[in-house]
Length: 323
Image 1: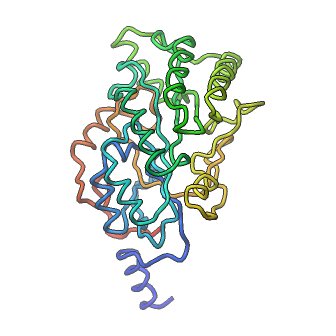
Image 2 (image 1 turned 60 degrees about the horizontal axis):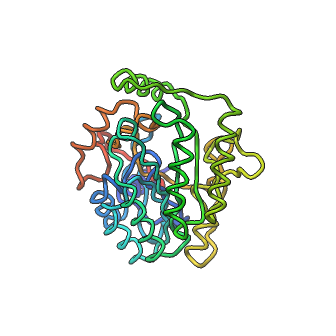
Image 3 (image 1 turned 180 degrees about the horizontal axis):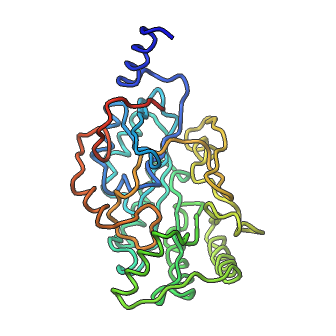
């Protein structure tokens, strides 16, 4: 190993030489970039790269957003409104994308900053009519049972949303709340403050509700899939591919090659690079797996710099390059 090789490697890490391998970029299942970080995303798209914090080591690595390197984008959101300009710019670069749009519109106690259902429907209509019918995917997740949202509530709400979205999407993705320690902590905090109760029902009850929801979806021309929870994949309940190379290929009008890279049992996702960061989403959903502390998430959002190359400040001087 020579010093010239080391110098060249460091230079590439800092400046980001074009990578011969293209990649699907996910933005983001760790935070809601479309709702809260649209300006930051546009700035990074124009710059051609961003820095991403590794959730385990805390170190930052570089992800190329150069149009020569990005195969496609997958956007995840609960409010597409602030991101319309960004979508149009991505489209102008001829980069295909799909949008995973979570629409539950739960009571404010559970989903603090839910926007009106009618607004969500207008966004889905905009996606379908502007960019094509395969671009928009509805997510009815996370499903959670509380004294405010019993099974009957979900059947009524799901049916209402499915009726309004008929013709604008062909797939709805569902998942039950994963009871991580941070999720349980946030649920208990909300329950104590708002005088509500919640439960994690047994398997048979979950399957029963999912099958009823699937029948409703099918009547509205939608396939219902289950995200990352293989224990519920049975019969008509299929596993979802949220990062879906086949759907992206349909949107792009050409074959998009990518390897399967599941995150857990029951996950059908293809390989991607996610550019989000945990504890940065201020939506305030009590069931969220991506936020351990809502005060920290709010602080990170309020104090973020849209001109920075990362969502939160980074201190390390050497950054690993990863497309």
